[in-house]
Amino acid sequence: MHYAIEFTPSADKAFRKLPKNVQRIARDRIDTLAGDPRPPFATPLRWGLKGLWKIRIGDYRVAYTVQDEKLIVLVVGVGDRKEIYPILERMKNR
Image (tube, rainbow, N blue to C red; front, side, top):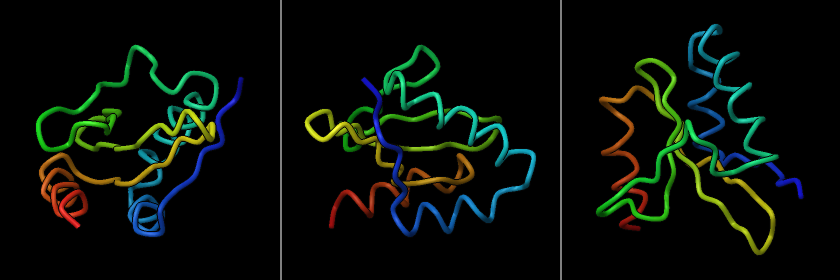
């Protein structure tokens, strides 16, 4: 069972701003989510961000949701670890 990988417009824009070497690593890890959206290197977020998962790439994070009923992995946030969590909090509170 393969999942489709989709990006929100803001996550896509943030992804394009990453350094090229980080983009390559992140793209490889994101692509693996199509086969297994909850791999060992991904971590579920807690507290106010429950329902989101994250992938660590050095000092950067990729946050996503898994929509099992539609077989979609939706990347909702990409950025530096110091900046991504407040952005995700604001998104979640909308």
